[in-house]
Amino acid sequence: MVCRGWRSFAVGMAVAVAMPLLAACDSRDSGSQPTRGSAAPITVEINQSRDQYGKMAILIQLTNTTDTPLTVTGAQVDSSLFDGGISWQPSKDGLELPPQQPKSIPAELPAAACGAPADASATIKAKLNYSESSKEPVEETADATDPYGVLARNASELCLAAEAAAVATMVLDPGLEVAADGSTAVVRLVVTPAGATQSLTIESIDGTTLLAETPSDPWPRNVTIASGDAVRELALRIRPARCDPHAVAEDKVGTLLPLRVKVGERQGLVKIAASPELRGRIYDFVTAACVPAG
Image (cartoon, rainbow, N blue to C red; front, side):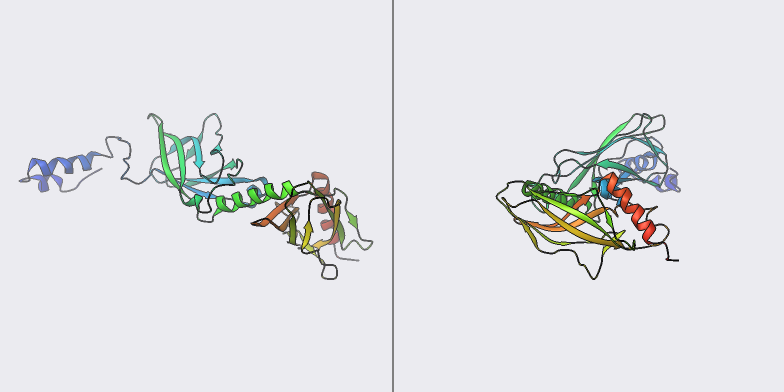
């Protein structure tokens, strides 16, 4: 780094003042590592795409704030909302971060720590292993940001799903009953009580990016399941929620049925995934139903 005018400034100054100035001018050229008071070479942000949401995974976005390429060989995010770290498994050569550029890496979520307090996500720590070309690897711990509340939302849904599963098993039957005119179909939600003392209430069922209810045959609401109940099948008549050319081709969560449920003190969304067999049948139905008649 060039400190213009330093020599003229230093003339006549005391050595005790000049030495810190000289150190500041030479710090970047010396190749020394950043101290706690300096900006972090890599910033960490939590995000989640629709694809990750369906797989219970997140994206860890790493941004290189320096003017030098950095190679990341390890990344882990720690939050008390989860049992264990959220880790990214690197390839053999690691991940190269270009100068001043971000890259996102996927990481699977571990089990949620359901006893954690509601504000446990206030502090999220990231552990990074990275190196600059021709320099020794660096291990660093830094704060991570979660501007969209991804970790809190996912932890809440995982804990709700665990409590709901203790009350009843809920699955989508692999069969699909398509109406004679092909415009609607019926998918069945099978609910099998599991013997827990708590009850579960399916307050409502949301549509997806691919499926919607038919106004003449709305989906059931406020269905309560308790221990000792018989197996129940909820028939859901569906229609395409959209018919643009990309509806099926770009689908990520269209066959992930969101149930709004309440179990004890917990309330929120539980997502029921279609099996590969049913997913294929739904795609075929939507494709056919969206073809104009005649």
